[in-house]
Each structure stands twice: as C-alpha cells, then as structure tokens.
Length: 304
Length: 306
Image (cartoon, rainbow over all chains, first blue to last red; front, side, top):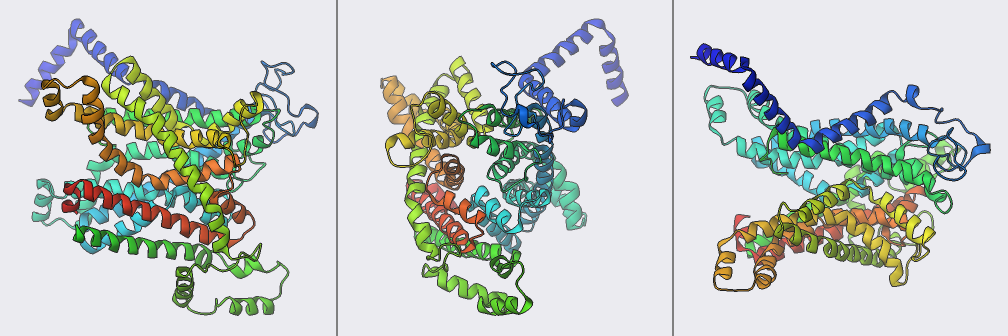
C-alpha cells in the first residue's frame, strides 16, 4: 500500500503541470504569512546587525567627541554624513550606539525567556499532571505573582540585588514565569484525560516518561509561540528598567538607557530619545508579527 | 453564592499573605538591611549592635511575624530618608495614582469601544484591517517612548500641553492617552471578538426578525452582552493597568506612588518601597476580588463552575 502511494506521489510530482501547481500553492501559502515573513526578514537584519556590530558600526559607541556634541541627524540642517543619526550629549555616534544597543536587549530578552519558559513549563506540567496539593501550591504561587504588576516586582528586586546583566536576566525570567505555568497547566489538564495517556499508564510507564515523552511534545508549538511573543515583552520591560537607570548601566549602550539619557535633552535634541525608542518599537513589532505568524502556521486553532 | 464568596475570600487571604511574605523577603532575605543602613567604613561592633537593634538576630519566622503584625495596623516603619512613617508617605501619593489609573481606563475605553465595535460589524473590511494594524502596533509600542514622543510633539514643539506635573485637566491629557494606548489594543480585540460572537447568536436573529432597527440591535442587544467578558478581563487586567500607570508616572513626573517608589529605590529607602509594594498589591487584589464577585452575581455559570 505504502509503496503504491509513494509511487503515485512520485509520478504526480514528475508532471510539469503539477509541479507548477505545487509551486503556486506554496507561494499562496507563503503569501498568507506575508507579514510574518517580512517581519522575520526585518528581525534577521536587527539580530544580524547586533551580532556583527563591531564590523557594521561606523564608530566606536563609546568614543566621546565633545566638539561634535548634540549634532542633528544627517537630513537636518547642521547634520553631517559622519554621524548619520546625529550624536548625543557627549558627541557619541547615535547610529553606532543604536546598533550596539540591540545586543543588550536581545541577549537579555532571549536569556530571560529561556529561564522563564523552562521553569514555568516544568511548574505548569507538574501542576496539571499531579493535581491536588501540588496543583494548589503551584497555582497559589503563580496567582500571587500574577497579581503583582510585573514592573513593580522587577523594580523591587532590582532595587535590592542591584543592577547587572545577570540580575536583570534572573529577575525578568522569574517575573515572566507565571504565564507559562498557567497556559501549560491548562493544556496538561486537558491532555492528561486523553486515551493515549491512559494507555501509557496501563502499560506501566513512569510519571516522568508520560510527562516528558507523551505530554510535553504536544505542547511544544504552544510554548514556542508564547516564548516568541514574550521576548518582545521582556525587551520592553528591560528597556524600561534601563530607562529608569535601574537596568544596564551607562556607558554601555542599551536602548533603554539611551532613551533615559535622551529624555534630559529632549527640549532641543529630540533625536537622542527618538531613535533608540524607534529601535525598540520596530524590534518588538517584528517579534510580535513573527510570533503571530508562527501561531497561525503551527496551529490555527491555538487560543492565545 | 455564599460558597462561591467563601471560596474567593479564602483565596484572597492566601494571596495577601503570599504578597506580604514576598515583600518581606525582598528586604530581609535577599538583602542585608544593616549593610545598607551603615556607612561603609563602620566596624564589626557597630554592625553587631545594629543587627540586634533591628531584631535581625532572631529567627526569620519571628521577624516575619513582627513585620506582619505591625503591617496589619498600618505600621511599616519609618522612612530611612525623611524619618516620617512610610505608610503616611505612600498614602499621600495614592490619589494621583488612582486618578491616573481611572483616566487611563476611560481613555482606553474611548479608543477601544468604538473601534472594536466598528471592526466587528465591518469584519474583514478595510476598517477592520486598519483597527487590527493599530492594535498590533499599539501592543509593540513601549509606552514610555510614546509618552516622550508626545511630550516632544505637544509640549516642546507645539507648546499646547504641559510637559509634566499635576493639577489641571490639561495635565491629564497626555498621561491618560499614554496609559490608554497601553490598555486599548487588548480591550479592542476583546470587544471585537465579543461582538462578533454575539452577532451570530439566535436572539440577535430573533431581534432582527421582529423588525428591531439595526442600531438598536447593536447597542441594546449585542453590546450589553459583549460587556460581560470585557468587564471581567478589564478587572483582571487591573494589575497590568496599574503597572502601566507606574511607567506613565515616571515619564510625566506624576506625583503618584510610582514616582515615590522609584525615588525610594534610588535612595535605598526600603520601608517606603515595601509599603508601596504591599499597598499597590492590596489594591489590585481587592479589585480582582470585587470583579470576581460581581461577575459571579451577573453570570450564574461562573459561580457554579467554581
């Protein structure tokens, strides 16, 4: 049977007419995700420029040039091609700083999401699978964390731990974990009643094996979609903390602290605050669009 | 209804105890208050003396009990910075925060309700696509950046609105819009999907069949019922809204609890931070509790399900 089907499929593929049909269908499918694909391209450019910053940036982001301080972007009167997006209050090149600034945001965003998704998924699996006391304990913890505004929690903990890259990753990772726990728990509750789980148990599979081999694979696409969307949220929060001066410390360029420094000069030099903010906006927009497309592609029925 | 309310109250108490532990832990487990209080060159003897003075030589649960029993009476200790009771400091700053939150909520509804209903009624049209685009862009917008851009445009360039501060209605416009823009996208999506779902129900068809005008169908029959999920989610989003208010306050130098908290963090004034965190969390928890009760009253399916 199988070999016949394979043969038919092979023959079908060989005719030129069907080949163009397949291409057309593929293109149409891709067209459905046009926004996602475009956003992925933009995101690739942003990630690429952050990774290859030392080769791409025209200037050192830390080089001070006090003579050319507060120079406007190139298209305004007084702007020079030497500084495409102008310079900040001590004459550092804004274009280079914006390119380098992406490094901090992306590293913290991805690392924090890795922390929160791994812990959150484990908690959600445990709560959904074991029910009763385990469920109650974990969900109470999660509810306490959920009632706390994310921002407030992060602020309070950073205040005590002190700002550093590692602390930011830990704090944002922990603050972001309840979402995964809740969604994974709900899905686990539903899956655990399905027949293949009962079959697994009847065959004498151990709990860990059922959880990690039978339940978890069914949740992967959901987790990937949430994690993608959460990177954007974490980046916004990280830049807010840096904006307040509680995150990444100057002179290290980060979009948040550039925005914070630029705020002081917004009366005359709007560009210092405008471009890092634009960078945050474009990045989070691209990530959200990619996340939405990923959701539609992996599972159009996903409730998110 | 009584059982439902009792269930909710038990949960409320657990959550409040949890929050107080968290706030306690922030200072006492993670950090060492003595090191924060004493100058860096203080000797070991001085350290021991302060350690004892603050009761830090006692077991953690005794310390927590002392902290909690005083906190219940509104005693969070004195501010290390101004030497006035932390509770009073925070309480003074509470009204501006609550006004801002309310104004933000109104702004969000003013944006989200018309757009959401319009998008639902003209589904898959150009208008709907525009609304979706606005929602997607709004969700990606860092609101502190939006606030700064508003200041640059309206206060610095056009000079029509005050850049920061508090007092007149003009001071409310930009912060309220900023906060509204934060909450509007998700509200708009909810309104849209709620109205779409309800427009397909049979009682709407019945209403149309008996000759009720389209406007009445939308306003009286559809919108009222679409309100229930919106109210629920908005109530549960209250924490997010307050979180957004914190961000907005810091941008516009709004004299609320958030600016106080951020200033206190900078001054390492932990009693104030602790007090502010607990009071804000209490407000959020009580609002959630009330929303749960109200929803349970309106919709019997929920209280039976619980």
